[in-house]
Image (cartoon, rainbow, N blue to C red; front, side, top):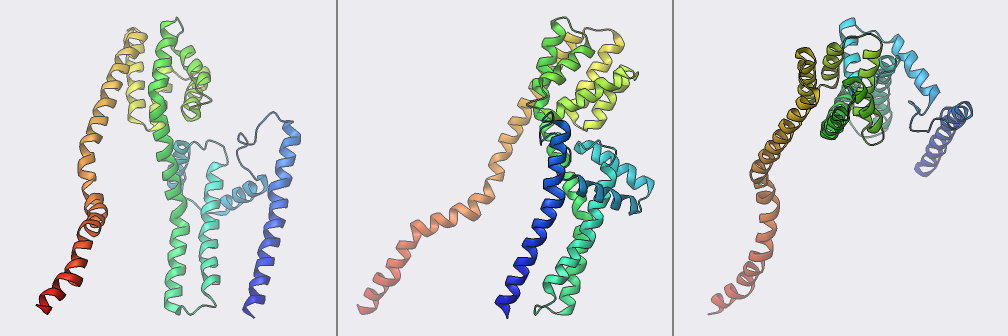
Length: 304
């Protein structure tokens, strides 16, 4: 009976995966390939399944959300790099699906087991909380990773901007050139510079666009760079000299951070050494001695 039930579940799951894969994955990708005729790669398509994206967006329209929460979620999505018009609705749809699917799946898995009803109810409620809060934590993780990538790319972007400004380009043209040159290796920073350039081209003042750049990325080094550029533009000082001074400051700051991390390394190594390395050393060095004491020396003393 158990083997038959397992085979039926396997066949059902395989059939469902094949059906939904053919319906929501293969067909939309083929349609996109026919439309763009190879002009857009698979990585540039925002969502792998157009049908699932549309379904999540419709679910997001149904989910109620206060304007304050929606605005905060929209800002977090912008910080994570999701700038499409349907990003907020898709995010709310993902939260709704996870809120319903995880408790339901947990209940189905524990329905025919020996787990008591109280424990089942506790697990179902816990999975419901995980389904509601999980997407927010995943979004926070994506934001942290994106900020880290932007921080790592900023020194190279600053050096390239210095070269562009010293070669005779204006600040706007330098931002465009940096965005183009860094699009392949640092797409996050390139997209932020591209958005800033679009804002300035559509009539926003340079100071406001640079300030929005620092606020949007939420990176301290980027905020400092934007403040330096705003002050240089406001007071009429040399952009190249200001950028070079800021580059020296960033190198000094990076060196100080590295020295700080190196100083903390000894303290952080205490716990792994004490709990992982020392017990192994004691087993290897003291273990044979204790074995010989209990098996050789103590019997000799008793026999004597």
